[in-house]
Every structure is written in C-alpha cells, then in structure tokens.
Length: 276
Image 1 (cartoon, rainbow, N blue to C red):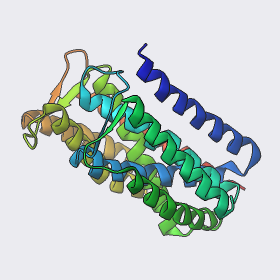
Image 2 (cartoon, rainbow, N blue to C red):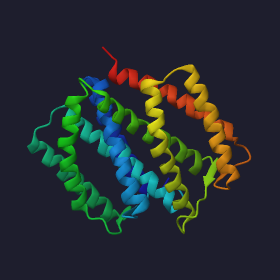
Image 3 (spheres, rainbow, N blue to C red):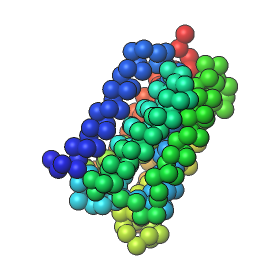
Image 4 (tube, rainbow, N blue to C red):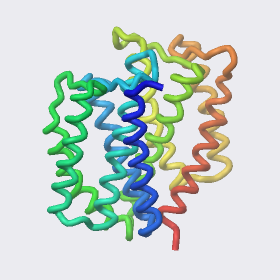
C-alpha cells in the first residue's frame, strides 16, 4: 500500500466518523437526504471540472491508470469527505463563525495535500473551493429545512442525485477493478477519459427515468419493461461498437444490477421521506 493512499484513506475514515456521529445524534433519515443531495451536486461539479475540464489531478496510487486514480481520489473527497462535513454543519446547525473555521480547515487540508504532492492543480485554485463551500453551506442548510416537509421537487432531486452517484460509483468500480466493460465513443484522445465521460453521461440521463419510476411507476409491469428495455439498450451499444464487454461478463448482468439497485434506492426513498 502506497503512502499516498494512506492519506486518502485517512480522509475517508474521518468521513465515516462524521457520518456515524450524525447517525447517532440526529434524525438521520432527514440528514441522509441532505447527504445524497450534497454528494450528487459534488458529483456533477466534478464531471464538469475534473472529467471534462481536467482542473486537477489526484495521486493516491491505487490504480495504474491516471484517470482512474483521479476518479478514485475525487470520490474520497467529493463523495465522502465534503458531503459528510456539509451534512453535519446542517444537521447540527453549526453557527457561521464555526462554519468559517471548518472551511478554513478544509482549505488547509487541500493545501497540505498539494504540499505532499498527492494532489495537483492544473488550472484550479484552492480559493475556488473555499468560495464554493461557503455558498454550499447556505444551500445545504436551506435543503435540510425543506426535507422535513418535502414537496415533489425536493424528493425528485434528492432521489435523482442518489441514483446518479450510486450507479456511477458501482459501474466505475466494475470497470476499473473487475474490467467488466468499456465504452469507446471517440470524443477524447484518452480512451479512459472517453469511457468515463460516456459512462457518466448515460447515468445523468438515465437517472431521470429511474427517478420517475421510483416515485410514480414503481410496479412490476414497469420494472419488467425497464429490464427488457435496458437489455435492448446494451445490445444496441454493442452492435454500434460503443460497448465492449469482457468474456466473463454478460450484457444481461447490467439489467439485473439495474433492477437490484433500483429496489435498494426505493428502500432509501421510503426511509428518507416516508419514515414516521
């Protein structure tokens, strides 16, 4: 295990600790909705800034492919650490003076990672992060208040964010670790950037349909229709020479995974918004 990786794992451990404390001390079903919103917003920003814009690079040395290392490092920061901190500030109603100190500490961590050489700015600046976090605190606190009596918009956006992050996370590790499949669309010089951009784009679009199914059409007939439509979609991508599947994998497995994860997210939806 590389020394670089240990620093990222330490950040993940801090995140887990924050989530656990929040779980034990608060009404967690409301705060989980806040967590998914924050993680989803961070995920969409990373898609634009990191994947499309190549704003910075991470060096946890977990993968040999740099693009995979970037996504892995980003997931530690943007899927665990930052969302857990913002969720906790809203859950515990942290006063603004302490919020400023917390954001200052995050600025210090970013600069420390730069100094260690395990993170590098290409055109990004640490003060960009500071400004985004300061604005995010007020957005997240407003969202935390709204999830107690959520309307359709609040529930839709929260579940949409949960779907994009969960499905993208699962498919990323299927590709990077298990080597199950790979996309080639020819948009970028790097085949790995090409794959990641298309994979994320699929779930950004797909999640709209899945969110509606969870909220309005969660019945056997619609799940069956979704299953067969998903099978057809993947076979179409294979025929178009966009999707390349490993010999030990089968396109049908994508659809099985889709339904399984959809059932899981439906349970999360019930927990977050229908819990007494």
